[in-house]
Image (cartoon, rainbow, N blue to C red; front, side, top):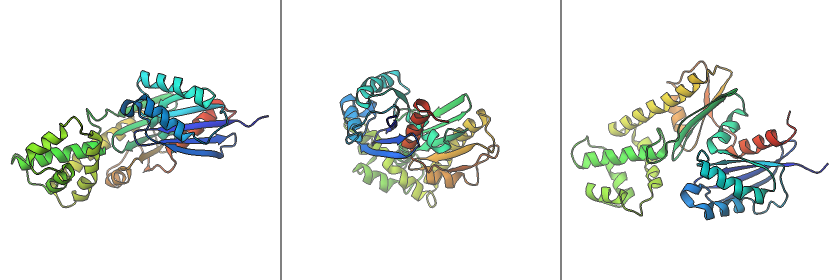
Length: 295
């Protein structure tokens, strides 16, 4: 019998990672390409990033799972289904990138994951039940995300400069980040047509760093931390998870939020930890289970 291979793709705003497993679950291929969030970079660049990630893979696959940013939107799912099948040479399942992160954390057992990077989302499953909260995007704001911490830092800076809020050590870093020297120019900067809102997340480390000494930064962390806890707890509680379940955090801000929540977290004995397996493994293992003779 010929070898059977199972492809996983993790595609987002900064990279596209590919992983291929064989029937035993052993890794036989890894690849990486550029960004593939089609809603941000467009169809041509997204398709090219998939090609980059699969550049040296020449065999066909039995099936693939693509965990792609924006896949909750039907047009994104349709795009990847039509774009990926000819390249992959087998059936594909397109899902949200947060779902493969959950699979990687839990190995498809009951549990939940909170992803805190530029944006944020919390997702969990328990048997046939599934629940997602957050993931609103930059226009509405995602609690505990780099963008939301940065957005709050900008507003606090404007309030301080216009003397309608308390003084804060965030003023210096925010003005330096924006390359301006006044509230008026800061406002103009963020409303410039060429302004990339994703860069607001670059201010998040300053909020975290100053939270121990600056009351305004501390208040931002407490507000966002309360929302992070609320979302995680809601998913845990509404799914009816118990101490046998797995709870975890992933993303660039995950270590900080895990430490912040360490003395605050409680939900039916479900532990919280940092995710250790990469999301692309969750996609490839999902493909192996869905399209192979997994038992």
